[in-house]
Length: 422
Image (cartoon, rainbow, N blue to C red; front, side, top):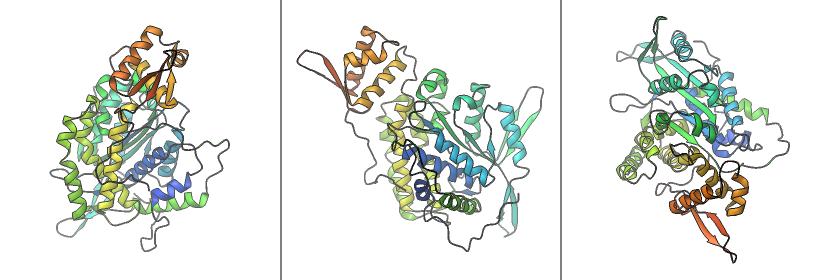
């Protein structure tokens, strides 16, 4: 497959691609965490299946599923998704369309391996071509991507998350599609309400979300009445360095200290699983270690061509993935079998947003969806959970104060790992 030539002898345009991305989008309202993860996705999709890390029987490739979940319109979640799609298309990375069928996706991927390849040296030192069907799935609305047949699409997304050397999809009466060198990256956006009302129960905590990095935020980065145009020179540098990242081929290696840091972190997983408070997150714990490795690979190539996972890469990846574990439950908090689960999640978000609010205020906000008795039961529930504290004024009017998902208002980070900023 022919590509725009890249001069690897020239220095990179960006000292750190993710830091340059942050500079490019500084004057936007979207939370920085949305831009950071959309940038990590863009790097992963650019690397495709051309770099890997040996890992037991099967190597790890940088394939990531990332979902940004936020209320409609409030946090500008579509902008990071759109820019990721724009950058990938600008460097000719295959990007799949919205509203597909399962067969349309597998047919597209089956065609890709005929035109996508790279060269590696075999044991005899001979350069041989390796075919692959790497693809990026991008949608500003998950509801649109799953519109035709949500169940079938979730099934195939779950299947092709793993980088199969060969994978076949057989249909009844219309043939079969055989995929070689699977590597799928996905970036979706959705709302908590849509997730609660539409995503199949088996997808939450099961195969699909256990493979997905769920990103959410509480507020905008800043408020801008008229955002200024971004700097086209920075965009050009971002695009130029993505072309360079796309040219990287080969096997990642561990820096010994990074390998030790990873091992120490992994040794905490048994206790983490035992103490997991949200059963929907237990399957994600089982995949956190490999997800963190993929993220570390992306963080490294954001700043260097060498294929070495260094201690800073691994430490930052651990911090980022641990953040996801802490915050993801809030993103699909309303999903469940309880008839009041959606209203409970909505009320928790309101208390979190206001910091402190009264019973009458909450009733005024939610009277269309609940009544006084139901609201009292919901508030008793969130107080019992420890997420909210109740106090009373001199007239015995209850006031509710947000305490945090864990009842202490604080997020928990791995010991010794600083908060990551590109």
